[in-house]
Image 1 (cartoon, one colour):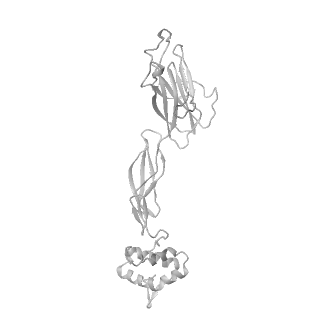
Image 2 (image 1 turned 90 degrees about the horizontal axis):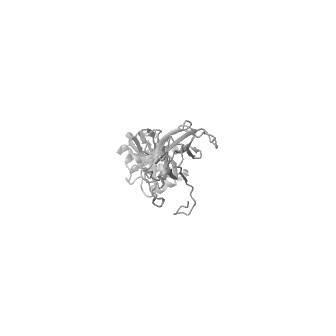
Image 3 (image 1 turned 60 degrees about the vertical axis):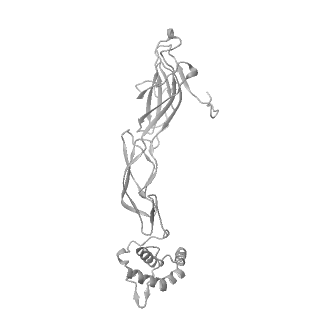
Length: 310
């Protein structure tokens, strides 16, 4: 048949052996690699003719309004015309697929859509469809798996996470902090079998000098610097900030601007007065100053005094 939207030729499988005894028709998919999937879903589109109003009832030996879905797991693609053998003992039975809507005349055929799923433990699988006397056409099948899509919550990123093998499975995923954030409480999120996240716990917080924008990212003026981990925020009193700012203006800034090739951004900030203008909290300016002096290994001396051990 031809697809109306695209004009492409579409292969379908149709059968109507209701006038025969002992019908035993099989059709099998190619080998389907499992990939990351723990459970595979099979969506089937098909039509089914009703048995009640069959136009030639005298020749109706047996008639069904369903077919059976089977699957066979394998580590590699080994199938041929004989293997796996075409019988119900070789394959695993998934379900009986019945039509919700049937038709009487071919011009009024109604398409049914049914979805079944099975857990997969080996590297791949074959799906097989077994007909025992239906008048049906298998239009298409779609095989897919479910995952919880990547998401950022509480400044923590959770990657694409494949759902578990059972319909009730719950997979716990740990998150990683966004750039310029650190773990406050270990972040975790639960991935449900239907592909939805629920019950987030923990999270990250922005590092000093950065502010959260919603719960997605941290931004700040000091993006190219990392504050020295040994700096004690309790040292950053008003008196201390006042002294180090005075020292910074007179001694350290000229040294940094003269010798440090990485200070172009700092120079622009200094020119705008952002270090001394009070636009940032005292402890942020204090930590930034300590970081610069640590990187440069300079010693701040003014009027015979040291800047409190720097």
